[in-house]
Every structure is written in C-alpha cells, then in structure tokens.
View 1 (spheres, rainbow, N blue to C red):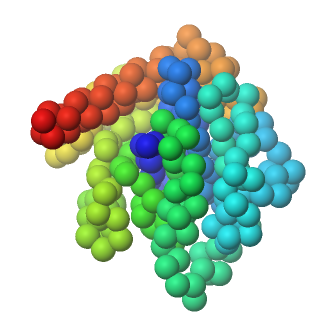
View 2: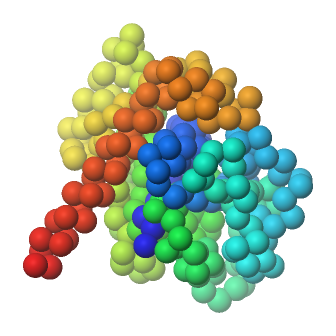
Length: 265
C-alpha cells in the first residue's frame, strides 16, 4: 500500500506546497504512481498545476464532508503518473462544520482506504496550522515530512509539532512516524543558512534529509506559469534538488522495507 505522507509545518511560507508539488512530480518521473491531496484551503497546489479551482465541484472539501466519494474527486495533472485532489476556500469551513461530528479526526483516513493500494505515494499538503484539517491528515498518514526554512527561528515550533505527532501516535494513529525533516530555502551565500543547518542536524540527527532545497528564483517563478519547477526548468538548482530528494526518499523507504523483511525472517 501507499506511503501516505503529511507535509506539515504550522508556520507558513516554509515551502510546504512547493515541496508537495515538486517532490510529487519528481517521484512520478521516477515511475511511481503518486496522488497529491491539496488539503489547504488556499488551494495553492491546485493552482500550481494550472487547474481552475472553481471548475472542480468535487474536491477535498466535498470529500471530507462526505458529499462525494474519493474516486470522483481525483483528477489528472499535466504530469504522467501524478493525480490530484483539488482544494477550494470552502475547505476552511470544514474546521467548524466538523466540530459536532463523531470520529471527525478520521474522515480523510476513511476516505483514502479504498484507493491507497492504487498508489505508491500519497502526499497531503496541509494548511499552516495544527487544527482539525491537519489532525485529519496526521490520522490518515504513515509518516510526516516537515519542511524547515533555513532562517533564525527555524527550530521554533518544531518541538511543538513533534509533540503533536507523538500525541497523535498515542491517541489516534499508532502507525504514524516522523519520516524526515527537509531544510528549505538554503542560501549558500548566507552564513546563517549554514549555521541553521548545523543546529538542526545536531538536534534532529538522522531525521534530517541530506538533500538541501536551495533558495532559487526558478522555483518561485514556476507556480505563476502553472507548472512544478521540474516542468518549468528541469536543469535549475531547485529542480535538481527535488530530484535528489525523491531518490533519497525512495532509498530510505527501500531500506526500511528491507529491514522489516530481515526482522520478519
């Protein structure tokens, strides 16, 4: 079954959607079958693939409110092997609408059950908060990917997020793990980026991916053209970084699978 990966950080502007789009694209280019769930009411992943949010009547909002079955919400993108469940601003209302609902934390998990064996990877692009939408994503996921911007306050809030994941593991989803921390917007010309990298690696060790996502103008430009950066400029530093990240993620998962087989034997 699919690796279901929630891309989470309660802080905005750290590269969650950029990572969701481009890592999904890179894995699809490696021949993996990928589904990206746009679970952010801003819907930036949806517009980032040049999809009109208003034209998609079935989306992540109608899915979590059980107004549509998941098969009707999945649409194709311009990237072979990559599908998307789009989002609209209506998703923001779900935080309130689900308050009186029983088992509200499991709406997304239950929806994904019927299709998770059809994909190698399912990514959930979460909103910049630790509210009910993110809780749904964590309850549905097998692991968490935390993008972390290389700036002075990088570590601020990470301990809270990791504690939230522990609480979810204890009370809602015993199968979830912290899959990795990804350093984003790394600027090789800035000493601060190097200092932040050193501090994060000292505190979090092997959780931190070796791949660094650089601050790159082509990555910033790509969404305005309705494309992931790998389609906009595959040769740029940002594209190459996400290709390396995809390879590193595949190797991590292969290693874990082999280790489980070894233990079982």
